[in-house]
Length: 247
Length: 262
Image (tube, rainbow over all chains, first blue to last red):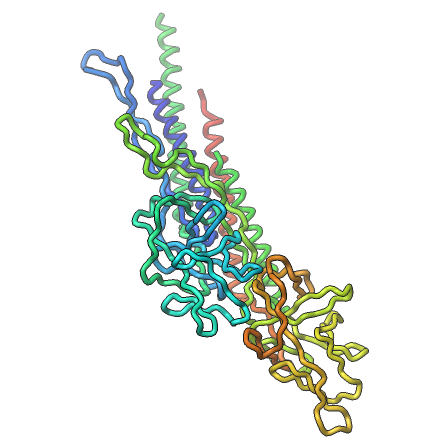
């Protein structure tokens, strides 16, 4: 009986976390470059010792559920046109690299600006790196920044830098660092012929409708777990009542 | 359950989004207005299980860990300095900039501000001023007996004085650019101020490399696209509702347990 309660409880704990993850996805449905997070559950067989008896050779096991991990869905979001000169979206795989005080971070949020000194920086003021890992300097007196079809940033026809796009053999090494950024200790590979779009940003890859149905499923599952809790406790209450009456 | 707080940050973000969109729509017909865009960033993540932690007695490790986000914040509200449409007005002192550059304006307290709104006029003492009466740099004085004013594409202001044959040059309008034009601070009345983020103003003349050209008799309309704003408004409203639903759901889940009959 206690096993049923434990099993249902383990389910509820996991579902509550799954809701937290879904809530974060829904909150970030309009966040540029956001990648949704998915929870993955696993079965955990807990051994209940000393339950051996007639027709039961050894220990019993009870199946609990736990959250094995959560993973990032790196599928590409939509492209939204902003007409801003310094907004870039990667059409395909890869990440922009920015040099933050905490080290190099990778991001799909390609809304860049110039700081007061003409450095190309991200929303947080961190320099954006070119394909060789160096910061990019733009002289505004030389006219607007144009991205050539070959992926080169140019001003009045003069190349100034090549925006760095980096890929990973295994994207799951990337850990979320908040502020649209990912951190990793792994070495990034410069992407070959990345397709970058100027004047666009990548929208969040959260599918709001799917997230809403996911949320409803979580809630219903949570309710059924509560139902099990209630049934299990009712059973033990009945047992106590019946047994005391019989005595 | 952090879902309650997470969804609250989502609602707050969408509220900010609606505020920015409504300001854009309100300024649909404001001369020289540049639309703004609110953009968001995810907040920090709570790592419940470190990647690489041992997950079983046989020594297998967790490949990814469990990372739970804590919501969203407004990352930036930035101005999109894209060129607005240019509309002919026929007024001599309506001046539009085609390309980069802002007009420099002297405020009454002596400070300088910058504007794209070129609907100028002449003050009682002959100065070229903005519609609020602030003098436009470098301070061109139009003589009282000037009958015809012409401003060339490179900003040279010339006047035909009554009774004289030749055009008289009165001065040349100047433009300023910034390293980071979106970093300017808006103070209302179509005026912008220099900030630490914008960098120092670079003063030049229209038509020079990196500066736009002057169009006399035109004004630059706002670059707000109403269709785009209305669809953004609808999306923001739906996103707000979805976050509200998350709060409802989290609340319902909490009440399920609170109402358990033990």
